[in-house]
Structures are given as C-alpha cells and as structure tokens.
Image (cartoon, rainbow, N blue to C red; front, side):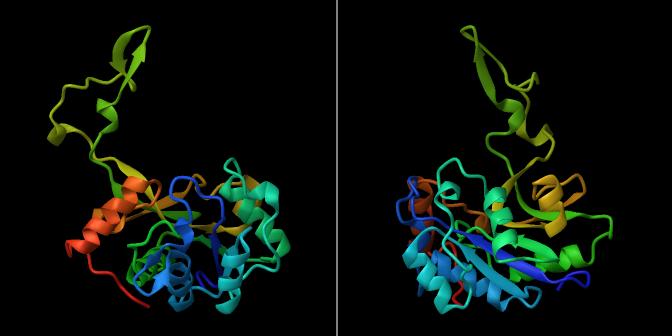
Length: 237
C-alpha cells in the first residue's frame, strides 16, 4: 500500500511487437522479460495486486501461472500499434476491476531495473509531499542534448528549439528523459485526466546503466553485449 491505499501493478504486453519480434518473451537469465516483471512486482512489499493485460494466449497463460492474469484477453482494438497505454489501463480498471488506489505501470522493456529500484521508487513517493499526484522514473539525458538538435526549414539548418547550438556540453542545463521503467499515479487521475503524468508529478532519477529500454534490435544487441562483457550484473528472482 501507499498512503493508506492499495497499489495495483499493471503490466501491458502484446503479441505483435515489430521492433523486436517476440521481445516480451525474450529470455534473460532464467526468465522471460514478462516473468521478470511479474516477479519484481510480486516481491515488492508496496504492491497489493499484479495484473497482466495481453492479447496473446501464451503470455496470458504465463500470467495465469503466476496468478497475475487479467480476467480476459485484451480486446483486439487495444492491441494495435496505435493503441495508447492509458487506454489499455483504463480498460483494465473497468474490467478487472480496479476499484480504488494507486496504479503502478511496469513495462517489460526495462530489463535492467531491479527490485531495489522499485522499492526505492515507491518509498520516494510515500515520503514525498502529499501534494504530489504521481511519480515517474527518469534518466539524465546527455546526447544529443535538446539544445543541439536541429531541423531543416526550407533547405536551411536551424535550431529545433531556437537555441544557440554551438555551446560546450558542460555549460548546458541538465535534462532528463523518461526511461520507461516506472510510472505511478492514482486510479481516479487516470479516469479523470487520462494521463500517468498529471501536473504534480515528481521525479525518480535512475542511473544510465539500469535505464536501457528495449525498443529496437540495436537495444537488444547493446543488452547482450553488456551482459557478455560483464558490464552489468543480472539480478535473478
């Protein structure tokens, strides 16, 4: 529980991944990415319930083995490339149902986050100002820095943000990007505002080495190289 209300961990996975075909069932150590995510959620003392939303029978069966399956398979219209994650979660809120409390979104494509990260993430929110409505995980973003990004306008290179681009990196302000590991907000905020990042969202900063997000094949190659070279130590659960 957090702030006296239950926490439901939602894990959305589908069978039609194109960037890395079958990535949700990619095996890392003893477990698939889906199983690793379920296990982390189940082991977290702040999490009261774990629900996997999927359109894929194999992944549904895995979730059932861990008593984490949604009541039914996800509707086909919520399993397309264009389907929004918030709509998937809202469907689960209605059909599972999720009657109250906090919703923790765990995407399986963050394979290097740890149980310790999740516990610290929840603890940070528990101890934060009560005015905080949500918390999200971030990683410092160095390259390319947004101030250095360009666009081409009528054949001419111009700054995308209208900033001076030829500035030493050390003089640029720190910026952060979403690393996809953790999102948490209240069920009622999701229903009323349809977002995991309302106005009063606080940050949880994670290190770069645990912020890898598996989006395309290059990310998978990087993960395998890091493991092969012993640059990261894989936690097993």
